[in-house]
Length: 213
Image (tube, rainbow, N blue to C red; front, side, top):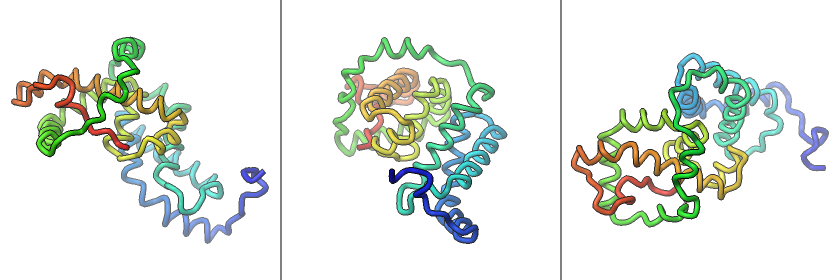
């Protein structure tokens, strides 16, 4: 089979080191940001990034040149977090995942899609700029599965297809989870946004974050 270990080309140490430095090290900063947003702790984030790069170096022969290095590293980090760091990370109080699942109907996944006029986009950006601390607090309060899709999509700019590969879940699950996470954040921030003069006349649309197609 083409994906068997015997068929993976063996690199010389010099070539491996050169390619590793050129292709994977530029992702260091966003990788650390992802780790910190997952662990909410600087030391844990540094340890997680170090472990990710150690694993990436160990299995670098399996990285296909020309593919998305950022997505590959993010997947390794996500798996390391789940397997090794999640239990000991300093997590804030979380809302009940099942409670959110029951409250937001997954059939409404497509409802966020009509990103409208330029004025709507400007309003959304203004809200994001004004309520950074509140967004961070609300984001940190999400269950980690919801927090992760927001980070990958709205902060790191991954497509649905890339997110599905990073998280190893179907695209439909990505869309559903992202929709619920955005709705939860919107509810948490709605009162603050209104107090800043960005009240919602259209209900669900004013704080909806853009879908990343």
